[in-house]
Length: 339
Ligand code: PHE
Image 1 (cartoon, rainbow, N blue to C red):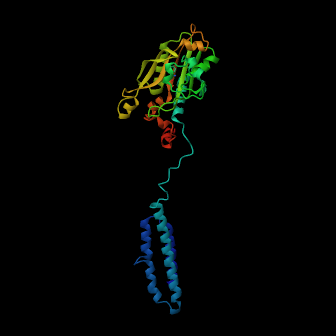
Image 2 (cartoon, helix red, strand yellow):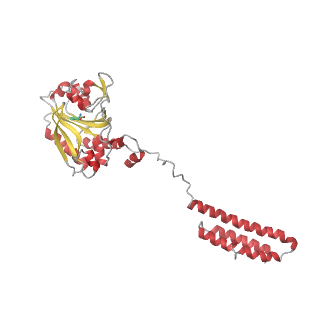
Image 3 (cartoon, rainbow, N blue to C red):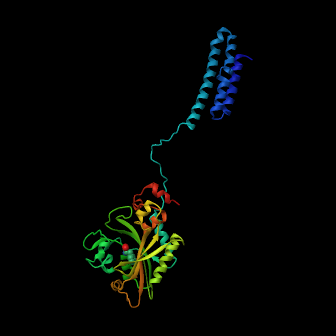
């Protein structure tokens, strides 16, 4: 075989070896040894060069070098792609994470939707009252006259003397009853505002759901039964609840319902003020004074009302130990509520 045929042969076996070699360090090494190693095929060409005519030596020498360069550069390429896909990260780990373009439903909305559906099943429908309301709807009509000490329970943001940011959803009761005759079975969710210090337990705005049921012969035991039904549907049949007597100017008698949170960790003590119980709602039988404001006949009708604190319920349900997380819009927090 002539030198030129030999060069041609080595080139075509290399090209076919090269094509079949995987992107794998070991294969690259084998192929390198086979062609460019000390005992490699390229080195078999040099003794043949000695036998070539003197005037052809440089031409053949160049051909051999070209082939050597060809092989070396191909193997180099492979080597570098292997390295870069394996070892060199093309990402900058110091950059912030990129986010999916789809958001998730906020836990407050998830809770409101679930509570609405639980009460819809027993005939309550949803209505909405205004967030900016008057002193009359928020206080006066609910039997909380000016200078009544109960106003201190709800530190109010006033816009002017008469207009304020509602401090509870109970004003929705008044709006609805003024415009509708009994029987009434409504839920009224929404935001409320109080000028409170911000802490793990309280914030200057939060969410409530008001419930109101007015008909003939509505009793306190129906109120208890309804709220116990709700707690079981929402938290599961093992939930522990308790009613404590309380005071609201617009209900008589009044109570608060607590749900058992537990006392296992330091934050449980903080959240429940060391009792293990978390208050989730206020409730009671609608006070006849309220019926007077909306011109309902309290001899014919009675009713119950309740106001649920959504944040407390969200914290219980999802094990959130700092209320502020619900308003900060932190992706890492919100992403956990993706369905
Ligand atoms: N409005 C009361 C509050 O914000 C809760 C409540 C609603 C109590 C309805 C009784 C009846 O604390």
